Amino acid sequence: MEQAPAAPLPRKRVDQPRVEPATIEDLPALTELVMELFAHSGDFSPDRTTQERGLQLILEQPSRGRIFVLRTDHRIIGMVNLLFTASTLAPETVNEIVSAVGSIPLTQDDPLARRVQAAMLLVICCPEYLVQR
Image (cartoon, rainbow, N blue to C red; front, side, top):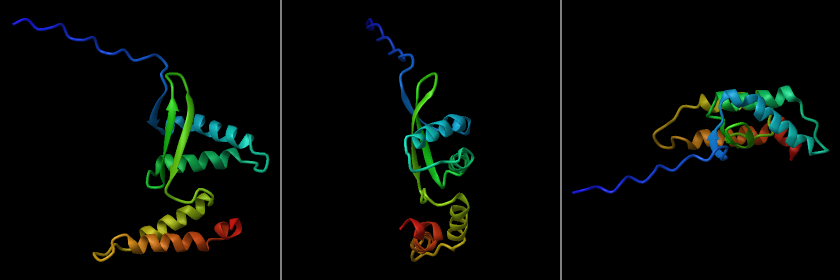
């Protein structure tokens, strides 16, 4: 019995935008995107080094959050930052909260409840949160 010829494989369109997880190699482009965003806001003057450090912390420690990029074959054209921590807290404060919450032992009764409660309490009691409220 003769088989029908196989259908040709679809070709990848050149420069077609795609969503991918960001990598540490994307850090300069991500920092530039953040600086562009803040340039459009007249009431905030960002520090490039601080912004880059915050992005680097997220990329190096996925427990903090995830960054996804919209890229073509040639450049990053957009990004989405999914944070698991409050984005307006200083990196040092976030580090302290993550460390404190991570030190709480998990129990059989409520494996995460105590950690969630502690995280919420630490965030709402920290000076940066109180100032923003």
